Length: 545
Image (cartoon, rainbow, N blue to C red; front, side, top):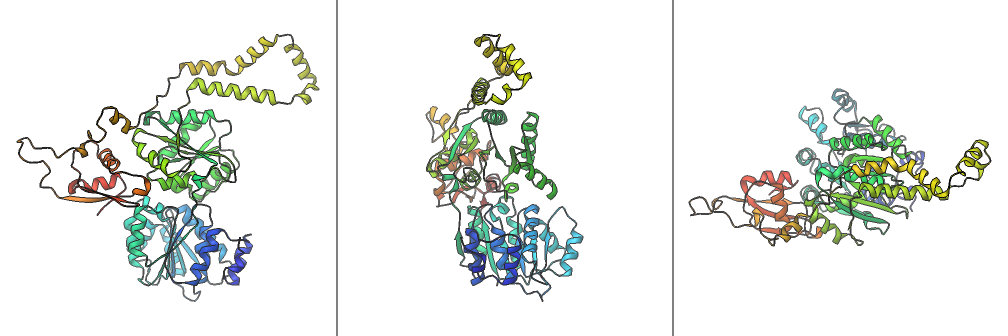
């Protein structure tokens, strides 16, 4: 690894870095810092969570500031207030020995008046969430006309949270002549679109490794109906002896619901999401790192910045929308040579995603069965017996009370002793297991259609346009078609029939014809009637072209 002193940083910044205890640069810092210091090119930097991205862009950014200019020279955009505050805190520490350098964090949920005051007092760096920055722009309280550097941190998350319009508005307020650095863990089609529009001949730096493809990660999935998802999750957790992991949900409301249900089941779980204050977030994370909490329920956005090496499990409560998100999540387990499990709770509609992942992951992804109640109790009995056999009772035998108890137990036969011991521990659990209904395995949708003998027909979008009641002309004959962009393509293993199925599932209950379909490497377009294009794009997180 490389020392920070060899990366071209000025002495004042090296002092700040050293005071924080940093000596050697991480891979992204080693590559990004000299590149950002040595040229005015735009950059795309691909790096996962916990790689040291803030120092990678923050140190070069700070080195290029003029302390005599008391107005914003650099802008850092981040998706969440938590990340916004963390970046501001880190930059303040890095700049501890740079006199006259100030930054201001602007984000929702805090006093906008105080933020406006700090901007007026003079700050060279603005770290902002898109929504609050737009608010300041519209109030005329901030001028981005002198911005020389723009950093888009966690760009994929900003777009997945729906900040596309805000990003474009903000970038349009900045000068044409500026340097833009885009940091992202994944590169879905919407990110590539932003790159093509706003970055000029960007240089790419990547330290993304296919962590999820490591042999130490066992990729598993089970297929259940949505109504059985939590019960399946609970049983999978109960089957494990020492689980320590992150459960990924799609929304913050879902994280709260799942965490509350797990807690009611007596499991050590808590949620982390955007509605928590920084103090609450730190409290939850401290308990998780100390393993007081064994299960952390989080959204992708809230989990950014969480870096824990010894996770045994990553659980996808619902399948993510794209393969890159799955890989990024799953790379959090199986680190440092330890075994890890990535478990997806898939639904019947996820079969095309699973097939795509199976092709993408060298070790594949295998289907497992939902543990039934009696199987879980059987596993617990076996574990209990193994632990009992492995126990060392020698010290206890010298305790008079223990010796007296042992003498009474010796009056029982071997068979009686074993029966009583197991009955006391597990009789209630076995009785409860007998009363629990089995969780039925779900069937992939594609399999259902294949069984009916019409896998490539039988979906509305695959049928020829229907005729009207007079039987003279196709119902949709005179309607214009519009292209809708999908954020997945050939590299994701998607086929044209799967795109048709996805469009039909998204617009369930609406009959419509489908025109030309074009598959690209990382994206695809599908032609649909113009009057439904906007709704389809909204439901698939796509874009109307």
